[in-house]
Length: 367
Ligand SMILES: [Mg+2]
Image 1 (cartoon, rainbow, N blue to C red):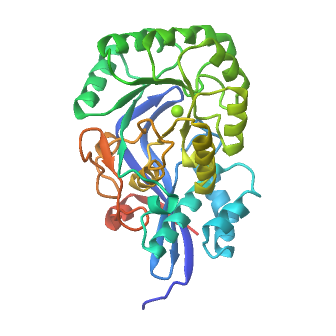
Image 2 (image 1 turned 180 degrees about the horizontal axis):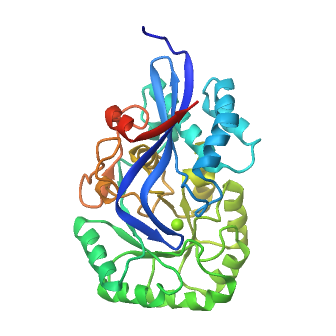
Image 3 (image 1 turned 45 degrees about the vertical axis):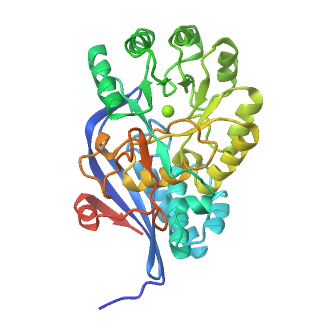
């Protein structure tokens, strides 16, 4: 029997094994558990991704907390709003925190809206690029030789920028050696907030390596100590974890806490907030780059559309699919020419989901 669905929103908990375990200053990930959001209205369906981890390491949110908040607060709000983006995003401001859960719903609703209008998302956002310059983020390796070999492999594929994860004990010598081996490459270092204010002197060594940026060296909620460090270090500071919403971005700018911002829609709490932050960056000439959270194809397709906006002048943390997953829930992203990933041109996120594979990797679903 065919049941006509007026409107519906649900969450699917999925698990994808990673090609390589990914190690940062937080620890190691071997598989990626995440939530996909599916919003349906009539014939159309929109997809979003909730980029939570199981443990509260990158942020306070977890898989469990997101399911709770989605079921009890965000899904009822989305239905009350008839799955409309602006109504949902305005309503979601009432709930504190939980940006990744909010963002997953926001992305699904924007995708749905774009599909109803028959337009690719980037056109609705007002983006211009047809391909996104691609950078790669390289986790902490067992030894320096292993790191250099991995970087060499990525460079031979055409990646335009390399970002190396650092932590106390894996920093100055490592970055110096990477720079010595690859004198010309655009290189960044990301500490994921692994340093304290007593350890900032150590970070000044980064200035010897001619880095494009040093990302989030200090506390995830801090702007003040970053602003002090910025006065002492020549390397441009990029902030990630600390920029939780457009207001933090404004305050960080006024305090002089950063030169560059890594934008992640999941950390910011939805498309509307990202568009606001992007406008702020545009008016002040702040360079942005689009970050990554080891997303599945749905999350990465969304990132590609957002990265078409003009303030995203630096290569994105958006790599080819094979770098993360042997098989993804959409056809793999490849380079259109070395170092560039084409932006999907179909309606919405513009990618077709592999429903059979989706079923295979699904752990649970909820409404
Ligand atoms: Mg980061």
